[in-house]
Amino acid sequence: QVQLVESGGGLVPAGGSLRLSCAPSGRTISSSAMAWFRQAPGKEREFVAGMTRSGGGTYYSDFVKGRFTISRDYAKNTVNVQMSSLKPEDTAVYYCALHPGFGPIRRSAREYEFWGQGTQVTVSS
Image (cartoon, rainbow, N blue to C red):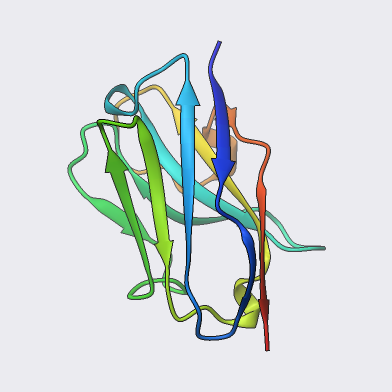
């Protein structure tokens, strides 16, 4: 059974940085498409960044492009997102998601089979 565990959330002032990490168990990141989503109160879960199973590239939503960087650590079997120049509007619960299949990047939460429990990121103004 696949389980995802996120870590690294917290409270940070505007302009600060945080690094989130996702550790899947029961499946390797090299055989998975991985993504980060976020959900703010009263809003839908939205795509933040992702990587396809083939690892051919990284993909970002426009609102984080240039500020967030997603990466894989094959040795640790983790997927990380380095978040910089954080803004109050980045405040949300951040979720790691996994899909075992090949194909183009999936930007809809409905397309992912496995989810972590979420980690809170709060950016103060």
